[in-house]
Length: 463
Image (cartoon, rainbow, N blue to C red):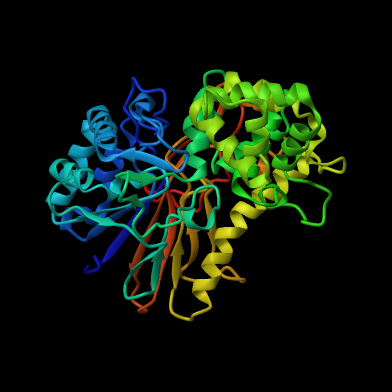
């Protein structure tokens, strides 16, 4: 693919089914994306590649009833993904028309898949998007990162480095036997728990990555929500401390080990689990069968996944709460330390990956997304033309580093939170080096939580 003189990168738009879809978190009340596409200066001369860097389309939440689960490891069939895509296109016809017009001026639109739109791997989904955006539409699939200007610009969504949202076979995540997509644990938790949670806490699905939401649940006054976080940590990590972002030497045992211990010593708990096992796995199971089937931490972890997949949270949350608050150890860290350390891990994880690329001596700019947290690093002295950039999302979000005491009750009203619609602009400067900038198209403070510090550059040239 030939490089355009200017590369414009946006990420994490999460387009759903439009105004009627509660799972659509994209900021669109004033036609922001359409106006942005129209105002890209060089686009009138066909000089721009618009690179949409993952999670453009919110397959994970639009029309949740379409997804017919058969396994905690498998996501949509091609027909299910097509039905979701049709709802997205219908809900945002103006956006797809704007992309079509943009590409019609000899510009390039490129869409890379993220963890929320792995559905782009289906051929029918790509053909449908080409039909509405234009045959020139390009897709980037199958790799953790993509390159422009030789290898001097690196672009990756970033989910590959997040255990909650990574895939075992990102190069080809289609299960050929079942003809379904692979499902990452984060999607399972999002579809089967977060969609339920946002009935009362409307902003909960905007907290990204999903492990950040789990850290907030950990601090909830409700023991069942706290333990829901433990489930997520358990299905992602052999040692939950990794997810919490704290020293592995702490005294914390896995949640599955606690469940296993209760099964072996508490007949009342065993009876309760047996009832759930019958609903989720085997209608004829006895208590003896359950003790045999759930005889290891790995088997318990697989059972927790099946509970998430098969049953409503109202059915399994009381059981999880019954395990008790001490199941992560008596020396568990405070909620504040979990939030703080986890935020640093999320942000530094991608900065470290960018540094890995810089260490090769070739890349001049690296762009990731995924975390919904805007970021910019121009070298140790801040004087690089390039560097590492994250535009953040085109949804309302919260700067978790500045709100470490955020509670589950704070997530009730979306209007409390800001949006800051950033993009990354990259071009080759007269010096021959790449020049990259994080630029804000539009922002709005929330009623309770303000925006992050104002960017140094705005699309209209103001500061």
